[in-house]
Length: 67
Image 1 (cartoon, rainbow, N blue to C red):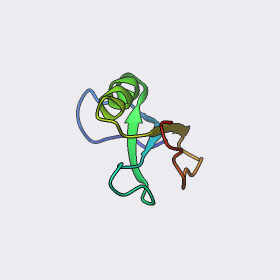
Image 2: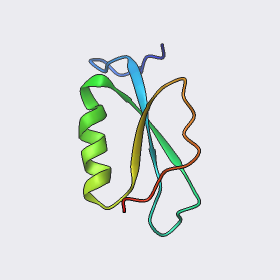
Image 3: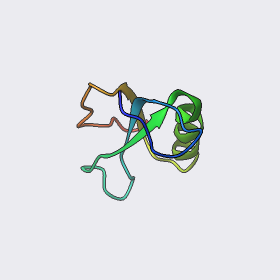
């Protein structure tokens, strides 16, 4: 597992793949520890970004629309 270099940060446990509505063919990947993954997912979803949460070893190259 990867660890962040900041004191108090958790071990990276998952990734969130996000697709901006203006650029639906692109996927941006965010890494997060368990303690922050839900917050980041909620933050992105509240702004209308489709989000897929996966394990670190899973590649999300497509994010479905929020339809």
